Length: 264
Image (tube, rainbow, N blue to C red; front, side, top):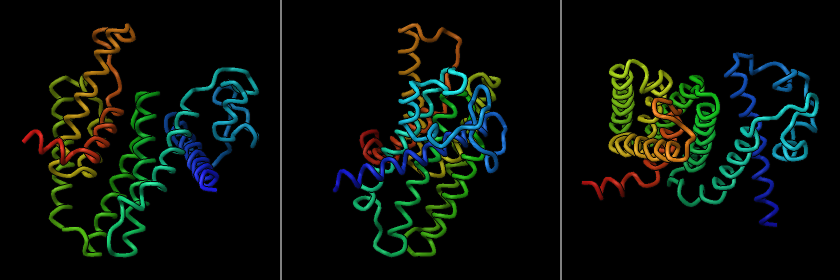
């Protein structure tokens, strides 16, 4: 029964991941994402329900469209699996680590981190596959984070000064990335990276934002070297930096305090 319950949660998350894929694709091509049925990426044929079953449809169709037989992006199963795992993790770990003493905050806190996880996954995938960071994801995450922190202040479990420091961290991180973009004349950093830095700083706050940003550059450098070594990239070619910023957020949240203690 426990395994069955986890499977249900996983496929519920995978369904959310499937919807996230739709949002990503329609934002990238500039389509209306509220209206309209799902269609083939290539020939635009409207998809039937059995062609949109998370994970299974991709496997059953062997990664090809059923109508025009063209290859489908691995983005679809990757996002569905990641969000499915995120949902299972949320159920397993949320009640252990994201509980505050006062209700309803004890329910709101894990829900907030679940939504943030979905938003960050969408940003990571969009930048990784298309080299674009959807600004609605970023600003939606910023608004959600501010409202969440304000609700914690009203509940008496979060200090107003901490929110101020988070906002300062957001401005500082964005300013840092804007400066890098300025001195490299737009070649070192994209406009989307500057905007994403606002969300990164707001989520992590001070001083964990330092760990998050530092980690993103270290991870980016390591992966870049590996891509050069294995011939996947050449000198002068750029790689999306958004995924490393998202991973930096994860590092900052999970190990930020321990890394700061080791460093200082």
